Image 1 (cartoon, rainbow, N blue to C red):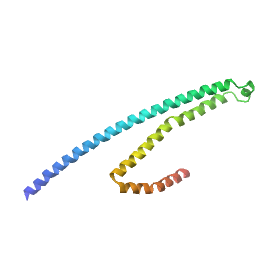
Image 2: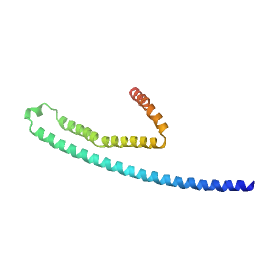
Image 3: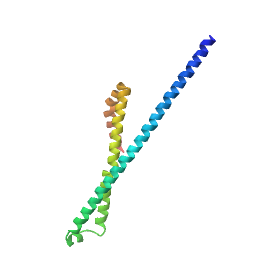
Image 4: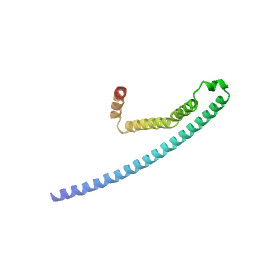
Length: 148
């Protein structure tokens, strides 16, 4: 009887070490994937912001050339500072729309599809339940946002 309990303790210790080694491997993969994800997001964000800045610079030069070709009477219709304030505000909105918003959208879509692929690989039944209830969740979220 003592032999069985000692034997079960030894087996339990071996299974614990197996679990710990499996866990270490999973932790290593999570750290690698997290680091790669952070680097890729930073890289994509940087490239989109550079592209947005270049587009806004081109727009500013085009607007400046267009303003310089206007007649003098056109400037009399505007209040002092109104044109520069509108240009700065509108170009900032354009930069925001072209830059980090697009990078965030692409990143979130990649995470969504990557998560769905991973979910289907690990447990397809639960994934189907999630996809079946997603429209209801999205509808409830939209109602919640409208109430606020």
